[in-house]
Length: 124
Length: 153
Ligand SMILES: Nc1ncnc2c1ncn2[C@@H]1O[C@H](COP(=O)(O)OP(=O)(O)O)[C@@H](O)[C@H]1O
Ligand SMILES: [Mg+2]
Image (cartoon, rainbow over all chains, first blue to last red; front, side):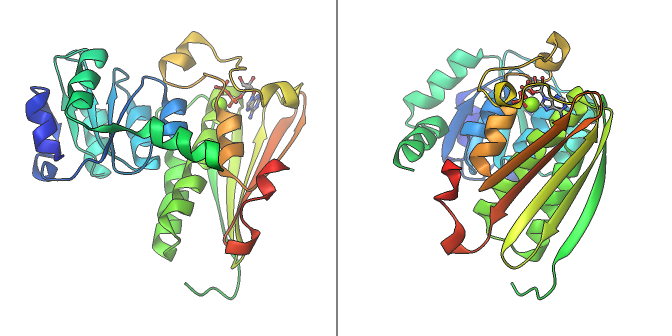
């Protein structure tokens, strides 16, 4: 699924990364806990979160999250957008809640990063 | 990649500076990218480094984060000046945390940091002296044969 398709499905406003909307998103991940994101995400994922601060951007960069969607009309301030631009991480905002936004994407078949990780952990 | 000598670099981390928290781990990640280390390994080192950096920002006064890269392994040492950890075994437990509400609002403080470091590293050593500081040292092996197995410790 492309970021553009996700943006349309979630009626998103784009805060930065307009030129990266054709990127491919393979997995979805939703959390306000950055340690969880670090533990259970994979590269190539989109992060849905209600946490709007610079830690969200650092976490996305470190964990190789492709793009971030802030839920419930939360808006990042200038510092956050500037940091995301510098790291080439598109930032979007949706009016939907975390639960609704996750559900919409999950229904279209976007798989969870967490499932992948838990399966991997059981094997290793 | 070919590296005959080992390479090392240090970064400073300042306690309570939430705005810059993540910069040292970002630098580490950039170095590894530049050298052309495998992306899965970069991700593991970056995640573990970031959790260690956040712990300094949340609990300590200051620290140095040193990365040492050789042909065999990547070693990160985070040496801080701070309150130290009284009971390391307890601190290692998933969910154990002394973080404040303010720290939790930053998305950290779920008691997952040290376990996350352990999960991503092949070896982890924590030394701490109450009232003085904590030294967190972890290694990620670059040689295929040396990886795995060591996780049981
Ligand atoms: N560098 C440090 N200095 C002092 N205490 C620390 C340090 N790192 C961790 N701790 C202690 O260990 C606990 C667990 O750490 P961690 O697993 O990273 O979880 P969290 O940071 O979410 O609380 C912390 O809540 C804190 O009490
Ligand atoms: Mg922590």
